[in-house]
Image (cartoon, rainbow, N blue to C red; front, top):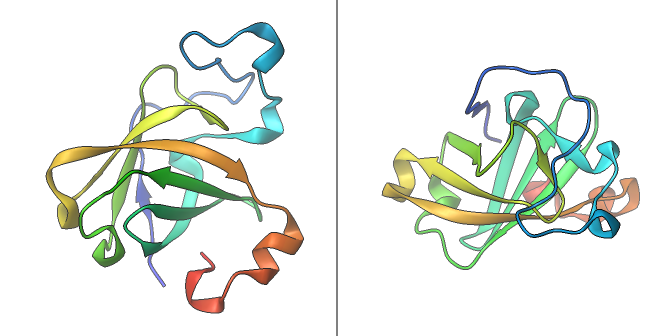
Length: 127
C-alpha cells in the first residue's frame, strides 16, 4: 500500500466546488462529490490509466488518465487542480510523480465510489 499524496496548494476550507471550465449550473456536483488534495491519505494505481485515492474518512475517488507512464510504480503523487483548491467529480487536474517523469499527466476525477464498489475492489487495488 502506498502512503501520502502530496498536496498542491494552501489548505482552504471546503465550502463549495467550483465547476469545471465551461460547466453549467445544472452540471455542478454537490460538496460530497469533492475533496481537497491535501486530505488524500492513500492511493493505488492498478494500471497506468486508473488511480484510486482515499480521502479523509472513508471516501474513495476514481481518477482516470489516458496514459500516465509508470503510475503503477509511484510511491508518491501530487494532484494539482487546474482551478480552485478542491477537486470535484468531472474536474481535470494534473498529476505529478517522480515515477512518471518530469512531465505531469492530465487526469480527470471520474467518480466517487460507493461503499459497495470499494468493497468489491480487489484488495491490492483498494487504497
